[in-house]
Length: 84
Image (cartoon, rainbow, N blue to C red; front, side, top):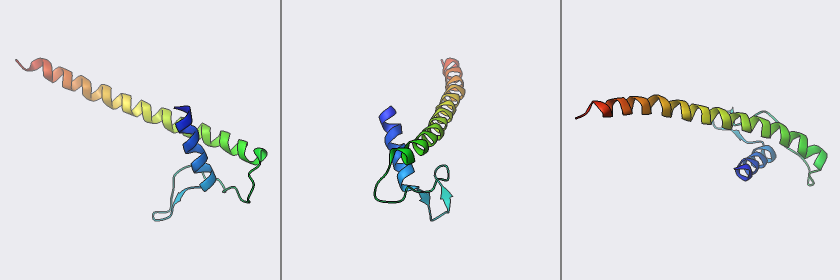
């Protein structure tokens, strides 16, 4: 899982992805890294900030999935017990 988050993080950070059709940002507003060579001092602070944001999105998404599963599974289990 860490590899997936890390790959997505690097992709978002290096390309500074912005959906231009709707003018909606897909992540925090960071300036793209400019130049031909990426230095450690330039990369790591942005990487850690983006990783913190991405981990927060991931946790919130999992919480939502678990909440909705618990909500609707309870109803389904209750209705299933009513059928003969």
